[in-house]
Structures are given as structure tokens and as C-alpha cells.
Length: 380
Image 1 (tube, helix red, strand yellow):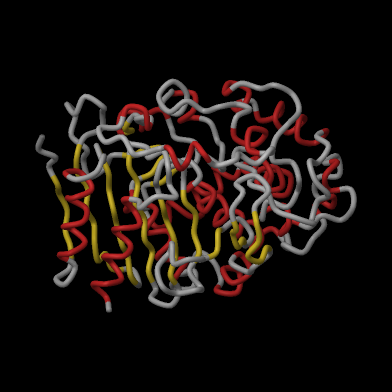
Image 2 (tube, one colour):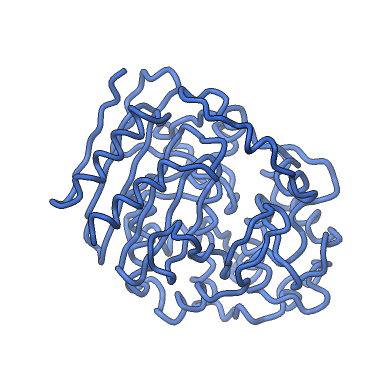
């Protein structure tokens, strides 16, 4: 089947386009985009394939797609604006802003909360995807939730709950939601096509998500299925389980503001934002604020939910094993199924890959990983 590819590349990056094309012809991509911005200039801007599983509606230049936890990096950037403009410090105790939060009673800092150290990776109550759209209900549940470990002593991935944590602090301090702040203070000045809470008028541009079980190419899952799931994994990621089509492709999901998981964006939109951050803030944020956001809060240690080692800053994942290229100072976030975005301050790069076909085992070689390797090989 033919998967049309569009866009532009600077001379010298032909290998990246070849890899992008092979992600369709030799892997499972259905629709995707990949963009690289350096010091405000677009080096690579590719898109192609289709918006739907049936491959009938072309993926266009302005197609948006749900990027799952790649949203966390965007949320972290929006919260950095709150730090800069609303007098919040990452070193402040959370109870200064949210005294009802049980997890914060013993001095948990804002930086620790944003780096997944709060111990409230899930809630004891059984919830549904619909509950995630009720902000006050989730805040009440989180406020009362007894931590699953002593806050500040370890990190465990707050897969969905993370978005409510900086979001509630931002709301209490500024009177605005984190999605509103992101839209007006980050995305709009850059004309970046990325959203946390998508207006209904933009829904027609969004591609539906395609679950791994519907992939054209099915990987060997035996090694993954043999892995032992950490006991907190279902707490954080299966209450509720987010179904790619029924939930993450619904109008309610797209409209809600869940800064942990429901950003709708193009690769160009995300890369534009990360490129600005990589270049020292570009007038959106002070360079010192960016440095504070990217400051390590959790050294390389095993995540209690994911069961693998990570380094974390205040909302970002810090580069390890070159998932964000060869430079240790790079930081960003990835999303379920394969989306990835990051800033490389050493090169002044913002990089983003987004797609609609989810990949099950992200420990295997990934479509984004091949693109990132090709990018840096082209820049060597």
C-alpha cells in the first residue's frame, strides 16, 4: 500500500526522510509527523500517511493527534511559566498551596511532587475515564488519598494523576487552568499547534488513535509478556484503563484538560515549543527558569511503577541511554504508543515525533528512536 509522504528537509538530512518513509513501508506507521527546529529555524518537517485505520483520509500538514504522556512535558513548560510569573518556587512546600493534600503534610516540595515522588500515583477508589473529566472530583480524591509510599523517598510514575498536581497548584495561585496558561502564554505567542484541552472547533483536525492490537505489523510479545509487572503498575495505569479508540479518540477526552495524557498536537507545534525552550526560553521563559525546570530531582533509580531506571526533573524525563540523542543535558517526555518530544540545549534543538498507530513494546526498537538516531548521524 502507498503511504504518501509530504514536507521539507534541509540538505544533508535525506537519511531522516528515508527512515520516516521506512516507518510506513517496513514498520507499522499509519499516520505520523516528525519535526526538528533549531534556533527557531525548521530543519525537518515531515508528515504522511492517513488519519484513520482504514487508510482513507490523508494525514495533512495541520493534522493533530493525541500524544498521551508527551503532554507532560508541555504541562511542565506551562507550569514553569507559573513559577516565573506567579511567585511559586519548586522548593516551596506543596502544603503552602494545597493544604488539604494528605501526601503533602510532611513537607513534600513542589519539585518533588512534579517529579513523581508524591506517592499518589493512583487512587483507591475505582474510577472510569469519565471521572477524569471531572476536575473537582479528581482533586477531592487526590486530596484524601493516602500515599502508596513515603512522599519524597522514591519516585513512581503518576501516569494520569500527574496532570492534576501542577494543574491544581496553578489554578489556586493564578485562578487559571494549566491548559489556559499553556494556550495563552506558551502556544499562542509561538503560533504552535499544540493544545491541552482542545476547542471543539478544532476537533475535525484530530486523527483517531489506533491500538497496538490493530497494528499492521505485530511484534513478538513473548519477552514483554514474560516480564513481571511491578505491583503499583495497575494502580497507576489501569484505574482507569484508557482505551485508544473508545476513550482517547472521544470528543470528551479531547476537550478535557488532562496535562498528563491528553495533549492534541502536531509534531511541528511541539518541536517549535521545545526548540524555544532549548534556546534558553526565547522570551517565553527566562533561561534560569528553564534551568530550574530541568534540574534533576531524581537521580538514576528504579521507578516504582514502571520497574525501570529513570532520571527525572520537575516534570521532565532527563536523558539516559541516549533516548534523546547523545547529549546528557537533553530533556523531554515520551507518550504511550510511541510519541516523543525533547529539547537538546547543546544543539538548540526541539524534536518531536507523533503518530496514530500505537506500538505495544517500547523497549524494542522504536520508530522515533530510528528517526532520532538518523537525525544526529546527519548532524555529525
